[in-house]
Length: 126
Image 1 (tube, rainbow, N blue to C red):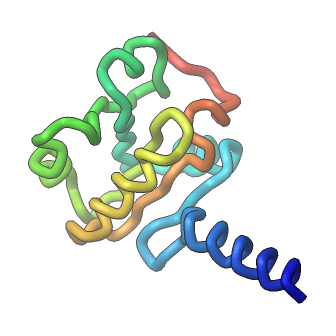
Image 2 (image 1 turned 135 degrees about the vertical axis):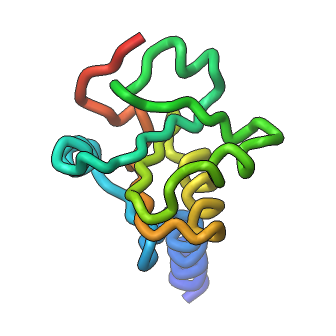
């Protein structure tokens, strides 16, 4: 019984910590992210990593808006809330936070790369 309770509590905590899709925020696998980007001509692609990470390699046409910058909110407010926003970071943690901020600001469609650029199987540019 004790082990069952421990496993139950751990599973609840793990589910609570994982990214959750909402009406406006969706987490996509690398292949689904690539497909959606290729089909969506109005996509706004945002790399929320540091400028140094961005320079090491990023997705083609991505704009670097560092979530750690104090002016992050002001910069993303300049994006079109009616057009889809695709976000990614290194592993998915920062982009999840960015997605939550975008959702609070009223963005209608937010897509996050599951596992970040580490999971990306497509081409990157420098």
